[in-house]
Image 1 (cartoon, rainbow, N blue to C red):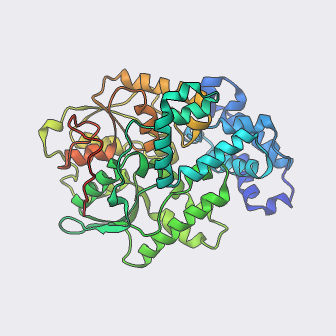
Image 2: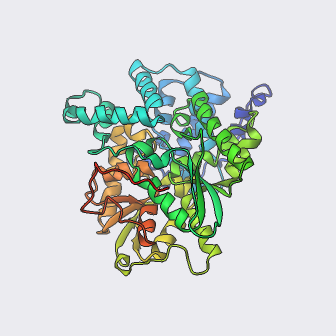
Image 3: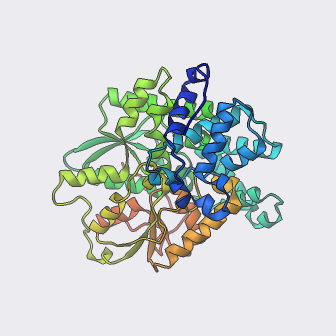
Length: 449
């Protein structure tokens, strides 16, 4: 694709990067075949190719965004299926992130949009605030149908029936490895996940320590910044990301880290991109160090398997074998991080029968805050994803991202658990609470240390 940025424009690092990306596009249209919003809406401007044209025109002409451009950029899920499909290697993620930052700076949204985005940016990344908001939403949920705005209805309907108690396992501390220590890793405990589902981090800690990892929850680490980053709120996202970089580098420079383990794939995609996000920042070198050792939990488990020829998550109870698990591939894992087989390989090794739905490459419609800001499109994608999962008649659905779990679990009628919960169970841990009939949602969370 030809571009006509001026030399003055090219002095801007963001423009320079977007120019590189735009020039890589050859208009082939392969991306339209795997774009969920194009399939749902059928509008070329709601495909990656169409959005690329809109972004190019906006940036080249240095014009203020108009409502049409903003509408189509907002409708993008950032599922990144287009990046997996693209034969030319167009890095759409960096381009759309730049466009959103540009829009945030130069476009005045309607008051209701500004208010919603302000609320989400100041609640979701903060677990305590989010818990309070969930409690309020739970109280208001019976009145959701009375809400005139579909986005407000979606916020109320998102509230889970039960809100787990705070897990003290998420506090800054260290969990010793069982037996000989193979690795020392930092666990990113996240933000929204700590309020919505404490079982995931607990299972991750149990599994990693059982397999010989010392697990550290670093002082000062928190939200990865993804939620605000994808809203175009760059200053806010970089501020929270910088805290993580400093916290993890303190551990790297202290007792050392072999990996930063992330069990929410949406966060993992962002943390692995810290090196790019901070490339022109004084924290550039430290950000690159963090990105270099950021790993999805499945990657770490595969590494441990390689170190142990006998396999690290082999089943200890034959009763687990044969359970049918429908694996949902989170977009941020299969497209954002290009991790496609590791979770399935680990589940099969642990004795589960793994099945996949048709069109497994397509998004479930969660996409961070997308299901709250674009509820109509999100619901269509959710309904399609659930239908394809139910068609496999699984005993349980497994995923590697809390957003997908909440989205699918809201209507699937089948237990939805994180992949690590099943692996923990198969290697000697407790049965996932979502599967255990005796589960008491008000029960205390056990201290693991």
